[in-house]
Image (spheres, one colour):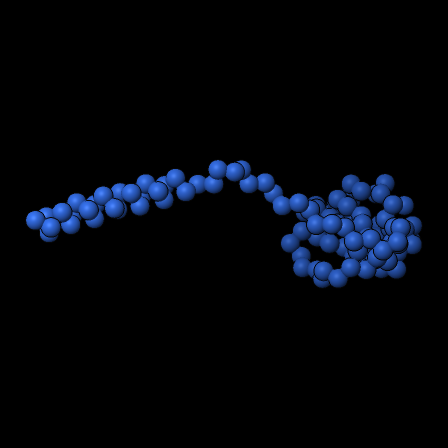
Length: 110
């Protein structure tokens, strides 16, 4: 008689496990992680504030030289989408972030 119940018990147990796993969805909506804090070393050490009027312009070598001269930055780093770059922070370096069409999207120290 006990052997007759084993298939029914196995089927009932499998049904419960399946039902529990189907309701294992998160009930709290997930929000994106906050942006990391910005590290600053003094006030605008690379002079990015002085060249913010050039955001949105097409970048070329002439504009790069102009950015470096107008900002007073020690170095200029051009950052295109998909390209690798180091994560070291240098307050005196001006980062020029570009989009896919070589338009300046941001000018910041780092």
